[in-house]
Image (cartoon, one colour):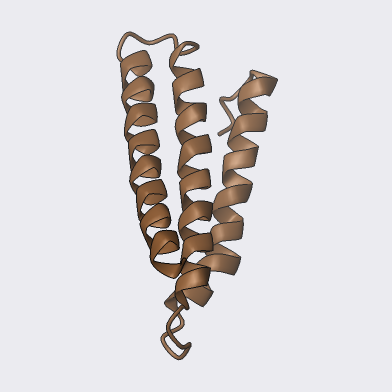
Length: 104
Protein backbone atom coordinates (compact mmCIF):
# COMPACT_ATOMS: atom_id res chain seq x y z
CA UNK A 1 0.00 0.00 0.00
CA UNK A 2 2.87 2.38 -0.66
CA UNK A 3 0.69 4.37 -3.06
CA UNK A 4 -1.63 5.55 -0.26
CA UNK A 5 -1.00 9.24 0.31
CA UNK A 6 -4.19 10.46 2.00
CA UNK A 7 -3.62 10.14 5.76
CA UNK A 8 -7.34 9.51 6.27
CA UNK A 9 -7.25 6.56 3.89
CA UNK A 10 -4.04 5.30 5.50
CA UNK A 11 -5.76 5.33 8.91
CA UNK A 12 -8.73 3.40 7.49
CA UNK A 13 -6.48 0.82 5.83
CA UNK A 14 -4.48 0.44 9.04
CA UNK A 15 -7.65 -0.06 11.11
CA UNK A 16 -9.00 -2.68 8.70
CA UNK A 17 -5.62 -4.44 8.63
CA UNK A 18 -5.50 -4.52 12.43
CA UNK A 19 -9.03 -5.92 12.67
CA UNK A 20 -8.16 -8.60 10.12
CA UNK A 21 -4.96 -9.46 11.98
CA UNK A 22 -6.79 -9.72 15.30
CA UNK A 23 -9.47 -11.95 13.81
CA UNK A 24 -6.96 -14.26 12.14
CA UNK A 25 -4.65 -14.50 15.15
CA UNK A 26 -7.16 -14.61 17.99
CA UNK A 27 -10.67 -15.52 16.89
CA UNK A 28 -10.23 -17.83 13.92
CA UNK A 29 -7.96 -20.37 15.64
CA UNK A 30 -10.50 -20.75 18.46
CA UNK A 31 -13.37 -21.10 15.99
CA UNK A 32 -11.49 -23.75 14.03
CA UNK A 33 -10.48 -25.76 17.12
CA UNK A 34 -12.47 -28.94 16.60
CA UNK A 35 -11.59 -30.18 20.09
CA UNK A 36 -13.77 -27.61 21.80
CA UNK A 37 -17.32 -28.37 22.86
CA UNK A 38 -20.27 -26.87 21.03
CA UNK A 39 -21.04 -23.25 21.73
CA UNK A 40 -23.95 -22.76 24.16
CA UNK A 41 -26.92 -20.89 22.70
CA UNK A 42 -26.43 -17.89 25.00
CA UNK A 43 -22.87 -17.49 23.72
CA UNK A 44 -24.06 -17.98 20.14
CA UNK A 45 -26.32 -14.95 20.61
CA UNK A 46 -23.32 -12.88 21.67
CA UNK A 47 -21.26 -14.08 18.69
CA UNK A 48 -24.07 -13.40 16.23
CA UNK A 49 -24.32 -9.87 17.60
CA UNK A 50 -20.58 -9.38 17.41
CA UNK A 51 -20.43 -10.56 13.79
CA UNK A 52 -23.38 -8.31 12.94
CA UNK A 53 -21.54 -5.36 14.52
CA UNK A 54 -18.46 -6.12 12.43
CA UNK A 55 -20.43 -6.31 9.18
CA UNK A 56 -22.41 -3.17 10.03
CA UNK A 57 -19.33 -1.05 10.60
CA UNK A 58 -17.61 -2.52 7.54
CA UNK A 59 -20.71 -1.71 5.49
CA UNK A 60 -20.75 1.82 6.90
CA UNK A 61 -17.10 2.26 5.94
CA UNK A 62 -17.72 1.01 2.40
CA UNK A 63 -20.74 3.29 2.01
CA UNK A 64 -18.83 6.30 3.32
CA UNK A 65 -15.98 5.57 0.92
CA UNK A 66 -18.37 5.39 -2.02
CA UNK A 67 -18.67 9.16 -1.95
CA UNK A 68 -14.90 9.71 -1.96
CA UNK A 69 -13.75 7.46 -4.79
CA UNK A 70 -12.43 9.12 -7.93
CA UNK A 71 -12.73 6.39 -10.56
CA UNK A 72 -15.96 6.02 -12.49
CA UNK A 73 -16.82 2.51 -11.26
CA UNK A 74 -15.56 2.73 -7.68
CA UNK A 75 -18.43 4.68 -6.08
CA UNK A 76 -20.99 2.09 -7.18
CA UNK A 77 -18.78 -0.83 -6.16
CA UNK A 78 -18.28 0.60 -2.67
CA UNK A 79 -21.96 1.53 -2.37
CA UNK A 80 -23.09 -1.97 -3.36
CA UNK A 81 -20.58 -3.54 -0.98
CA UNK A 82 -21.96 -1.37 1.81
CA UNK A 83 -25.53 -2.39 0.99
CA UNK A 84 -24.65 -6.09 0.89
CA UNK A 85 -22.61 -6.00 4.09
CA UNK A 86 -25.35 -4.20 5.97
CA UNK A 87 -27.88 -6.66 4.54
CA UNK A 88 -25.86 -9.59 5.86
CA UNK A 89 -25.56 -7.80 9.20
CA UNK A 90 -29.35 -7.64 9.21
CA UNK A 91 -29.54 -11.39 8.58
CA UNK A 92 -27.22 -11.99 11.54
CA UNK A 93 -29.32 -9.64 13.71
CA UNK A 94 -32.44 -11.63 12.79
CA UNK A 95 -30.70 -14.90 13.70
CA UNK A 96 -29.49 -13.29 16.94
CA UNK A 97 -33.06 -12.25 17.77
CA UNK A 98 -34.47 -15.71 17.03
CA UNK A 99 -31.90 -17.50 19.17
CA UNK A 100 -32.43 -15.00 21.99
CA UNK A 101 -36.20 -15.54 21.79
CA UNK A 102 -35.74 -19.31 22.08
CA UNK A 103 -33.69 -18.74 25.22
CA UNK A 104 -36.31 -16.58 26.92
